[in-house]
Amino acid sequence: MSMHLLDSLRLYRNRYSFETAVHQYLFACRVEGKTERTLQAYQETLYQVLNIARSIGIPARVSDFRPNHVYQLMDAVRMRGVSAGTQHRRFRETRAFFSWCLRMELISSHPFTGTSNVNIESKVIRPFSKADVEKLLSCCDNDTEMGVRSTAILLLLLDTGMRRAELEGLEVGDVDLDLGRAMLRHGKGRRQRIVPFSPNTGHVIRNYVSKYRGTDSGRLFLSVDRGQGRKALNKYHLGTLFQRLGDQAGVHANPHRFRHTFATWAIEAGAREIDVQYLLGHSTAVMTRRYAATYDASQAANRHFLFSPVAALINES
Image 1 (cartoon, rainbow, N blue to C red):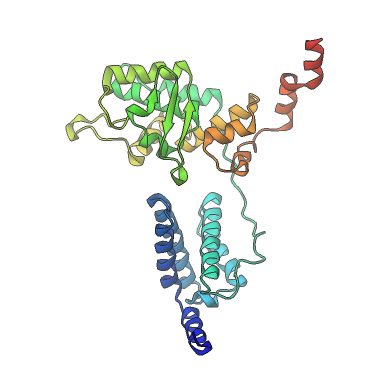
Image 2 (cartoon, rainbow, N blue to C red; image 1 turned 90 degrees about the horizontal axis):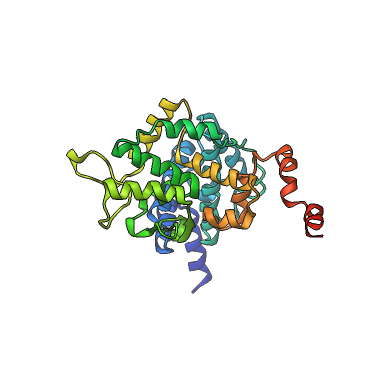
């Protein structure tokens, strides 16, 4: 291929609009096997970033994007009042998009170079206290199907730390009540794992299945409204459930807070980091360590007797 043609192709690529590049990136992600949920998240982020960029006058071509535009963009995201977690996700996913653009030679340099220390204040998610959990459970009427199902959901989330989507995707055949474990097939990146749960949780699930759900194949947790047919619970059903229970108990509740509580309580009880990492389905320990943010020095001191080498030495002598 002639140098003239190569130069022409590079010139064409350098004229890629942000929107065209996003289309190409999402197509590439789909070909690489990203899940639909991941693709939707990328699309949501990148189109919101595109709209913000347009509103504050950032150049429309990806090749014109510079480090100073990164700061303008993140400041605009912050000013829109989104949570710290959303800010982190916008920053991370936009940086990944430009990394792809660089690999595809749509840009000659990465605009995020030197901006890795953009400070976004992290919001610490506080785990439930035992009193919080007891209040939520007390709002479940265990003389009704909805109450028994709600109790089973709360205990399963607390006992396993599974994600909301993993709970939604759980099928009757995925749960072994005799062994006390569940196969999670809808984890991030299509990763599967087995998580254990306690006999108490198993008893409540067995009660729900035998009295109301039945052992037919399909999703484990179904809607209660028989007038519209029994459907698998989705994020909207769960959102309504946690809103109602939270309002009644006076506690801010959502599935992710149960996940955080599981991890925090496990760490406080002396669980190994590698165990918590596996049970949560984290690919690296970096994410797991976030859940130790509320584990302070006094707690470590109070639990020291459980793992003191000297105590172990004396007890063995």
